[in-house]
Amino acid sequence: MIVPEYWAEAREQARHKGRVITVRRYGWSDDSTEAAQAHANARAREALDAILSGASLPRREPRTNYGIAGVPIREQIVARHEDVVITRNSYGALCLNTPDVLFADVDLAERPSGCVVSIGGLAISAAVGFAVGLLAWHWVAGVALAMVGVWAVNRFWLRRQQAVFDRDGGAEARALALVESFSAAHPDWHLRIYRTPAGLRVLAMHRTFQPDDADAARLFSALQADRLYTVMCKVQRCFRARLTPKPWRIGIDRRIRPPVAAWSAEQANLPERLQWIARYEQRSTGHAACRYLCALGDTARIDPKAEHVRALHDAMSRADSDLPLA
Image (cartoon, rainbow, N blue to C red; front, top):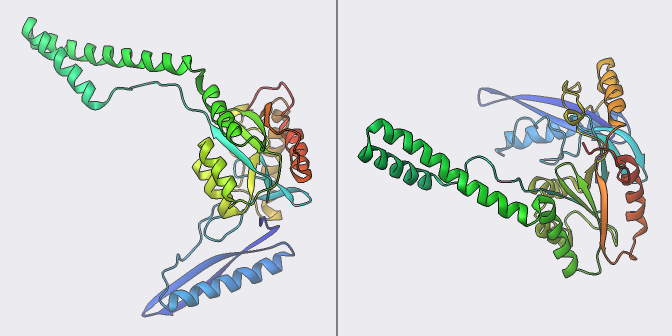
């Protein structure tokens, strides 16, 4: 896992075949801004030389906060707890980053709503309604019956699908069943389950994992974990969990500034940003990021590193409280 303290950007330029080629690259370091700048200069020069030699490379790296295309996580570091790093993400929430303690988030399925009938089914309903109205009365009645038919057919199937969804216990029960099924097939695993505002969070307690571990991939697949998260785990070489509420869930509509995660002391200490953080932290005290539900499997197996991360996670996310989730 690489979550650097210092960042810089370099720009290299050269004329090639009558055109000016400009390349920008980021650099990073845990030592100093100067070391980050030297790294950026070297990366920019290397990229420019490769492009001049015929390589197909992007001229600049996207200004994103998550590690992609060889760039580590670029977020403000708030605290370090041994090799666990707490960062503030692009919308202002605190996140726990760990190189080897496995977290997996499972999004809940949404209750059926809106239009649930295929276009073909709707077309048939409309055609039948129109034909009945046309033959019995007038084409205007046909149009009216076509509209009523489409509405009635969709409403009938929507109610049926909602009834099946609710009968099976709803979204949370479905997601929990996935975890229970995995636990039954792997009884030697110790899994802690948490409820989040939009799903479940699973924490493995019995041992540590590497983000590209085959067992971690098996868990992600079995739980139908968020695909973007699983990709980011491998790219960033870490596991990640949000510890504090999403701002819009606690009544904060104005975005934190700058709108990307701060990665320099100057950005992190902008007065407007500090004011936003103070308001956010005040609002956050009345909410939890997740709530502990239960443990499955061999609960006697507890890895010391996993226990260290669990204690930190539970305290900062307020997982043992009865506060509303956000």
